[in-house]
Length: 80
Image (spheres, rainbow, N blue to C red):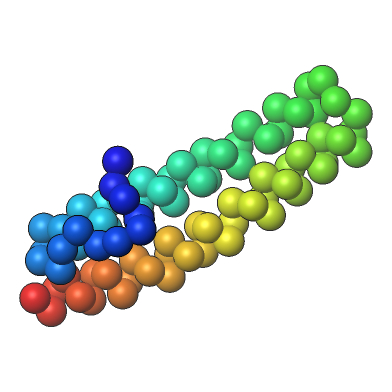
């Protein structure tokens, strides 16, 4: 795992690892939304939609953050 509290270095290898970690984080957040649709199998309709809403509200902002940071990291890496 990659600590997100502090950067491990500003060299291209460390930044490339951080970039890879940001891609993995985005993918995981997308994956966390997908199972929310399974709640339709055993919950009332309103509760299932509530679970979908919860999954979207708490994962989409993190996906947006990853997508915002990725081009910035790529520019920094390419400038080195």
